[in-house]
Length: 151
Picture 1 (tube, one colour):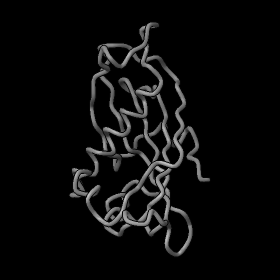
Picture 2 (cartoon, helix red, strand yellow):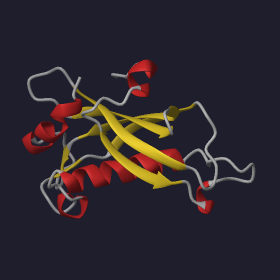
Picture 3 (cartoon, one colour):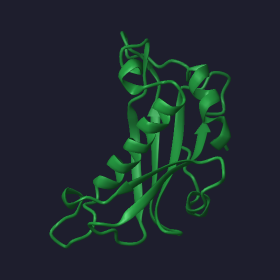
Picture 4 (cartoon, rainbow, N blue to C red):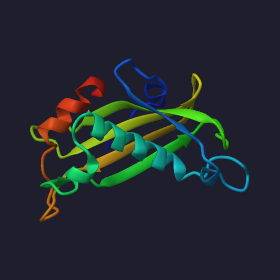
């Protein structure tokens, strides 16, 4: 399983896709900091916005021939985020399996408050045929869209 180095995720290259979002009241727990699964939701929101921007809106993708469910997700929490904070969620990296027809991609995200990384997230998506749920290659249009952040 490919994993990005933490230092790689802390950087937001100029090619990164970014989305600014608020930390909402419903995003925090009783301690007043972001409730841990919300980090994955922030990154998913950025991924959905990215797909929309590159002409692959999720509502259309879900009706198409392929799906890309998450097989693995992990997050490193570096700084607390609180209700009212504004964060930048950046899709900073993509890594495809190194085989002739890759069926998985690891996406790396950075959630930052100001210039400081607060949360680092990685998700591994496995591409499958919609009807059979058998693995299939990563669609060319998505590979091209992720090229600016591919490592």
